[in-house]
Length: 490
Image (cartoon, rainbow, N blue to C red; front, top):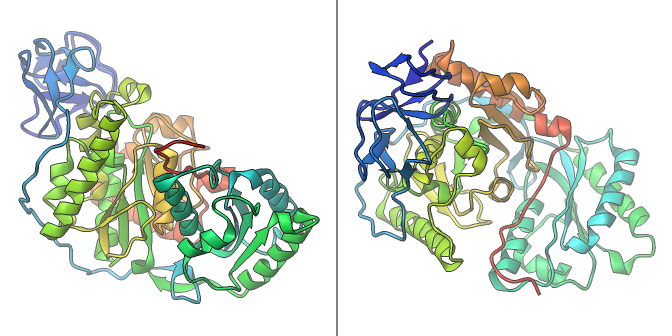
């Protein structure tokens, strides 16, 4: 196995896929210092002010002359990103025809949607009932836990003392949960006096099945725990009517996410996820790519793949509006890579973005979604949302994603309410953290070829969708939500 990879012929840096020691000859250049795995080494002189080229694109510029064999990272490289930009639509389309017809075992709901789990969810309209919902779920599991795939609640601090867009975001996220087909039955748990009270929430929720969705207002009951458990009993009985049946993979909606990334994310795990996205498109299914700030610097690649000019304009708004959000808070648009990202070899936001956007594969962009909006277009959609892991995966779930493919190079235990498949970018992580990691993409730089490994991984994903395999977040009970917030709390 080579110790490095030159991703694009035009690159002036290589990436270490194993630790490089000073004095070793790499790509015809002698390493002038130790280069850690995932980090970049210059293979030509890069004068001060000149761009660092990786993936064939600029990822920033040199703040000093970088000699061949030197480490190129945060100490001598700076982002090129600044503010909003004007863009021109230059379509470079790659329509992928529907040529595949894989299937999985799912639960067909009364409205025709398909769930991949048959669970009961307790959705809190307000943070004030978090403790009550914990008690309700504990009692309900003791009484009914063996009759459904699981009974879960999802605590959050909002639903009251919010204004405008923040309040709307809370309602949209929670409505997406209530409407999610992985939940066979839903108990909407309210305090009674909150801004997001049941009557107000129903206006956002829209039509619902009264057998599937029950509302419970704690202030109107004496023993709220015991009485709510009785209502959950009705939902469990309703859920028991659903049995798995074979359904086409076109019914699946898959979220595409990365977190705790490293310098190998854009070389192993993210391209693997991108290949799965293309396979899903070939099956007539849907995939969702979010983390808009992690498109900065690579956004034109996605813009040029928009199926038409209207989608291009929506993508421009998606990107520039997020930049304005950063600027309105006095924050630089390029200040995204975390300390862990940088330690793993990611230098700038452009570096991160060019790796991140590979999760979207090569297919055309068929939809652009606002936060809380449900994925509708067959194919790849872009979703408004931040890079923050829990906020992003919560938004994907609310958009109808049945499961989420989540790459990581540093490791993270976080999970969403839906199965969250953790994909390690390197074998070391997969070996050290088997209790977090579901799939090892590090083998792509060791002993696996992309085409066959992607097919193997897709079969695994269908097993997860069919509930033949539980993801580590499900096994560990790691299921969280976080709601996107911008304004004040009263």
